[in-house]
Amino acid sequence: MYGVAYTSLRAGLSMQKQKHAPQRGAVATTIPDKLYFRIGEVAKLCKVQAYVLRFWESEFPQLKPNKSGTGQRLYRKRDVEMALQIKRLLHEDGYTIAGARQLLQSEEREARKAHHAQPELPLKTELTGLKKDRNEVRLQRLRKELKELLGMLSASPAPVSRERKVKKTEPHERPNLFSE
Image (cartoon, rainbow, N blue to C red; front, side, top):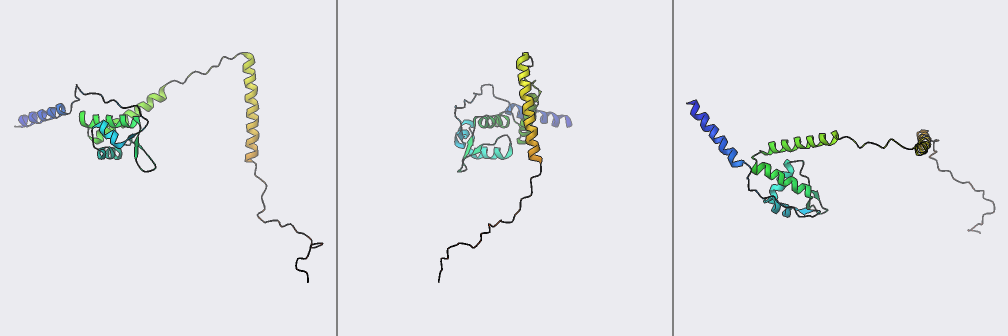
């Protein structure tokens, strides 16, 4: 009894996987060479409705189009590529929204790790003696000037009086405008 239910359950799962398997003859979507795309253009490229893209924006933090001053969504080429990748994960590969989100986040983390793991370009350390001395003198002068600036900025300024100073003038030899 249990064996029959288990095998039919396994058959059902394998049927689901076949249904969501990537299509071999799928045509790659060519993205036009433009700076920005409107939501309708992206919807046509992805072959989904505009409301689906707006929903994906709320579910996938990686999909963040810019907005114009009037609130129009402006997708860049990388946003269009991300939307196409999300569609492939959901519609062709059979991922759930949470699973696709998790996969994209892990790919993003791995890309960041790979980027930080790259060795930095070696600095040119072998300089000729004259050039090296000149650069050292410049650096020392620059350090000295920076220390002086730091000293000036960190020194407490003299307290500024908030009172207005009124210039007192003596009443001598002022013309009387209201003479009697």
